[in-house]
Length: 309
Ligand code: GLN
Image (tube, rainbow, N blue to C red; front, side, top):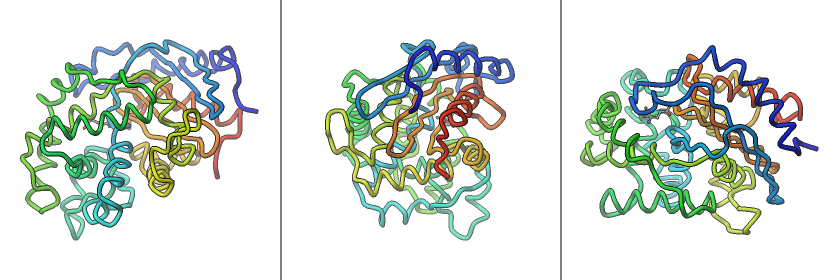
């Protein structure tokens, strides 16, 4: 039996919240710097539609890097594995998510995986559509279908703030363009990528998306087949090997579930065959993961034996 009551979850949230004081809100995207570092919320969505939650669960946050695993699923469905993996690799880097180093030192300029910024930019580039508006609309519709929530939108403020300060992502994109991995106007790619990262939801929506990944791409509540099983499997594998940036190994050992984090402080978990988890806690550790979010997942994993290993 897993966690069944809001009270039980609340006790774990209060315990995990103690570590928020050791973290720091990301402010390299200025709009993210406004978040309250003490926030911590969590939702767990079960396949029988039962959903338990604790903390400030109505609070919305932007997906940031969590969007990378969703855009990957979308692009794999759009273009097929062979094409996608000609443009982005499958190996963890051990470097920070925004590092440019390996692009130059590897034999080919192909980004090592889709969870680092360089790889995610290559993936976003592959989203089909005749212009940025159409490509973004296609992606957000897909995300709305995963969360079963047509009201999901994006934060114009966060998108604009990142667009104005994304010089490192521009540098990565120009590098990729020079080496033929992407071939579009970099400003258009920045527009699409920063909007993708600014897609906004609360932890209930995020848990529902995690549930779809956990259940092999099918939403067990409405029965919709959203992602082919094989693609859901690929995404969960990347979540294990690269989902928590250069802390993925430690996370696999201590917690042992497929998960993807973002610098806004969100973490999506997909416990295979069991449930989806959405966490939001904006105070980050030194590798850019939610410090209390990780603590909370560790408490949950220990208490309910969640590690898949
Ligand atoms: N939008 C952010 C960036 O590109 C996403 C990074 C993250 O969440 N780690 O820097």
